[in-house]
Image (cartoon, rainbow, N blue to C red; front, side, top):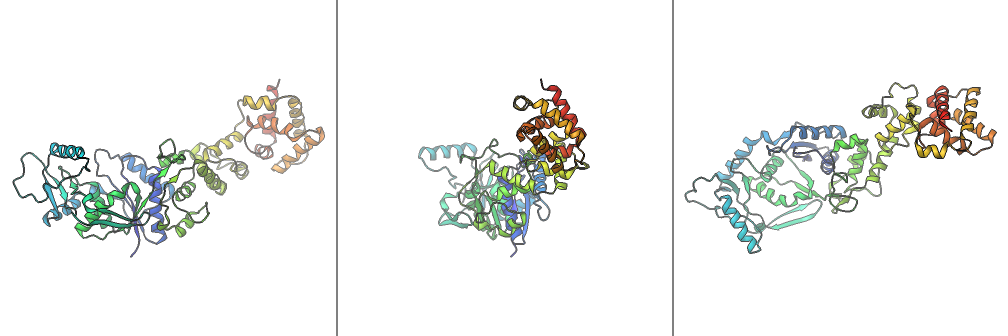
Length: 463
């Protein structure tokens, strides 16, 4: 039987990285087995649903390149289908109408809490045959087993079992007729042909309830994998401040989708000591049975390291296209290759890379104060003036970084000074700060005329 997995977010907010990791594990499982990866939008909560959130989820999937198979399934369009199964269970005596009022339910809970018992429905309408009380719209409850155990083997947690008495006759349809989460999830997973359900372990205790639905309707139970949560670097629950933010924010912050997916696959799964995985390698190597039981810790330094790796190994043509989203359009620059080769080793994100490029493309309007104090002191003015003269009289072409480096070497040799004596003031003159690409690379990109213009402007500011 072909593998079928799914991702089923609720459109009540953005897609965060924990959700994306779950989706990635499901997607890889399907792709590894040449199966299908389905997408379902669980939008039954009409009051909280957001069209904007739904679009954000779909946009995030498009950005990271995780395509789904077939049409997107929307639960909000399947209410008639759910009702047929509710009616079926009522007719077969596997579900019943419960007329318990909110006041009765509250009183029962208080009584159970006073006795230090677990709060649960007591089944008082399970076999009710009398006259229904007036003025109460009933909910529909499923008949859960009253003895034995509900067990399943989880691909991550191992064998999981609860006493049947722990699962009460839970509500499958509210008083207004709308179906509940555990009921519709089980129906949809069965009808969509799910063979493997991979989700967060916050759903672990929903699974026995869903198994009750599977059994009542005669559906085949899929394989379950409940994945441990992602914690922050201190081992506590991941918050928005730690990185549990909208997936599309990672695009805005300058992360590449390949780096984000590589980062997420390693949060809870490993293959030996390997850290860097292409998408093809992930597909070939991933097995949900190898998912770690314990939680994983979010590590920003690791993500930045991976992102820097992918930036360095991305073609300059592709980088130039991506940089347009960050206000840098160098697609038509005559020294595009040289410009990116000089900067992409220094940018851990596309934001940092765009800043590095802008330092070169735009002459500094001001100079960093700390850098000025360090670089424009002593004989810096005289050295820069001599360097201008050397550039103006240099007889060989200065097209390549090596050509420009030769001029710097000549000045250092003639004046018998250390390289830093020209390197620091030159860097601040050309870029306005002490950071950035190599001076020989910068000069080759700027050309002789622009290099001289920037140095002359800097010289006028040195007292």
